[in-house]
Image (tube, rainbow over all chains, first blue to last red; front, side):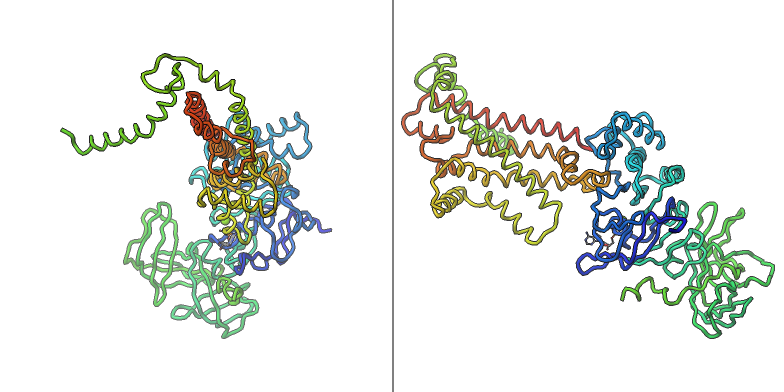
Length: 373
Length: 263
Ligand SMILES: Nc1ncnc2c1ncn2[C@@H]1O[C@H](COP(=O)(O)OP(=O)(O)O)[C@@H](O)[C@H]1O
Ligand SMILES: [Mg+2]
């Protein structure tokens, strides 16, 4: 057995609703104690995948394993999972105590132990004095904490959270983000978290699974999926990216040089040149935060400097988003503001560092479409 | 001068008078001490209620009606809740057709329903019996229960049940711990509906009842054919109380329960 056991494994799991395939042959491991996030636009199959793991939907094909045991034929109430919904789903006719104690009643736990464990769970979510209240007497954020307490008090093998923060307002959401992460760390419980919010995904996860159209586009640490997007879809979904086509001019061991169509030559990091040859077609992405604007840049070997003009400015307080024309290309740049933002019509220089230029996998730059077809 | 609005107001008052005056008259006359049911009333008395209680035929009819009503409401509500769960929570072929079939007894004229059930029984060459009467009443009240329960069930989010399942409660435990309590207002309303409809049904009952068995409405009907006794006023008053006060108080109770279990 491997050192790190897998809390959840998906092996070529498929879900079809009639003719429609919501989840295409998906394979994935969630290691013990890790926090894994499914992120993707609405309708990409996140909830369906989570519900298959929970046992609320039957997989059309493929295997689902929890703690090494195949669970395809085990009904939900025998799977020992913690489930948290976007709309809390606290039982409205039961007190907070009864809500949190609910799962323990079906687990042969004596009354005193139930009382103690409910108290501990409420302490963990920092709501110790609400046992006798009804759910509707609590705010949305408090209700979601109770829902979390109810899910973890049964010591589940996996915690499954479907957009648990989406119903909360922005400030509370960030507070809960930190809180949820703290509780997950404290308990060391394997967690699958579903969200359509890229910031949440990047902030909370050990691993991010970017999904689109029922496919996994990329799986990796937040840094990997952010800095080295595998596909055009990922580059665009996580933040703003400048996407370009071009051809490889040079792919030697220490420099990779790309001629961008209708634009400049860009340098890319040598790791990006692996397996590439002179003349190959290439799709490349540069994050908007990595396009540095200045009136003057000192030249260096590892970057390319381009002349441009500011078309429009989107002022955001501590940063600004600029639309810049350089030659035949339009760029987007998001830069922190040093005193005053650049203004429309101003001439600027764009600096693109080699380490920030990512070559996309051409087979995967169709947003899953080719694979679906 | 009469403006348009006051004409409408007057019309409304007259319509209500027309609807409720006979009811008021029946209740008033049930307390009349005279032998003849007419105004002016001679004096107040509970005489006719006492006679009612001493009339074996009426007491027997009451017992039959109440037994029939309770059995109908229990069976109808149990079936109605199960049917509604199937309709709202599960997908299966022919669902729409079945749903229409469940509601259909409301749309079919009662006489047609009564005769067809009777013919069906004859086809099976079975004699009329209490079970047939009960079956008829269940068929007849089921759509009302299904409509009330389905409407509420649609409003109960599936997530409650899914949460209970995920916490280790089996499907049946989930039903009793979560679904049924949340459904309770509709269940009570459905039971009351079924009881009241069964209690004052006459058309179907006349066709279905075995010889010698009378319910309160058929008993009144039989008595009216002989003479208009003041006892009938008293009986009418009791009927009004059972069929009006019971549902109203039931509705009030249901509303209170609903408020308590609302989010
Ligand atoms: N019960 C269902 N019947 C038919 N289609 C469904 C059902 N549930 C989900 N879908 C479809 O599957 C796709 C994925 O849905 P879902 O997993 O809920 O997406 P997400 O959670 O990523 O927004 C959507 O196109 C949705 O319409
Ligand atoms: Mg979803």
